[in-house]
Amino acid sequence: MKFSVSLYSFWSVIRTGKMTPEDALQQAKELGFDAAEAVDFVNFDAKEDLIPQAEKLKTAAEKAGLPISSLAVGADFLNGSNQDTEKEIARVKGWVDAAAALGAPRMRHDVTQGYARNSGIYRSYAALLPKLSEACREVAAYAQTKGVMTMTENHGFFSQDSQRVEALYNAVDHPNFGLLCDIGNFLCADEDPASAAARVAPYVKYVHAKDFIYKPYSAGDPGEGSFQTRGGNYLRGTIVGHGNVPVKQCLHLLKASGFDGTIAIEFEGMEPPSDALRIGLANLKRYWEEA
Image (cartoon, rainbow, N blue to C red):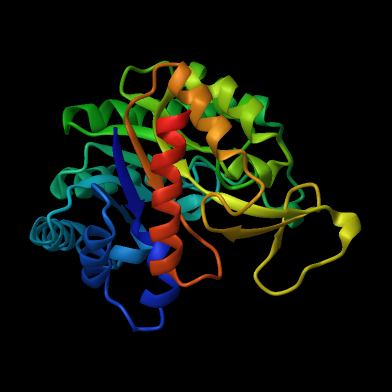
């Protein structure tokens, strides 16, 4: 078992200029993490050549003594690259090359956020599954030649439910394609995280540990720092163990299924990242031992 941290967890201080991604790597090491997860918009300028940037980040990670556990990138095989699916596939393959240059054994990519509500177009997830799975399969096959496993995450509202990502996994049906289970993100689709984790556990290759404070719509808008779920309820990111996600139960279910891979904390709360990650890592390690 390895405990990693998504560098997105430091985004609130990186974007202000108070910390560089290199600083974040060093702090992650000092906090006791075993690895770090790179993120496209945190660690890269997509308008520039990705490979030199990946090589620079790999050098910084090696200096900090942290391997790169994964690379997380955005993708949308319906709307991305000006709605040209083939161009979007080619773009995502470019990120696979960057993951290989990083030495990352895995890369997570999105699938789609669905058609925009004002587009006048709506298709169910099931109707889009053949197109989405074909794109994922092509990327997975290419990534296999580079020694990088590809994954999709329950993320982005449209492709977030456990039933949907399970269906996608089975439709892709490629040995180099798996699921990244974000135990907190199921709440964004108003789904019970424990039931959802139990459903997807057999397919999981990597885990995001995330916690949210949950408030129902009837409680009213809690204000700054919160966002609404697909069903209109409210969530705010917080320290692992401080929110309403049944983190320990989800870990128990994953452990019972045989998962013993890497778990990465992805913190997106309002607390200072250094404190949030220190406390969250201690909780996560304890929950895993007790699960």
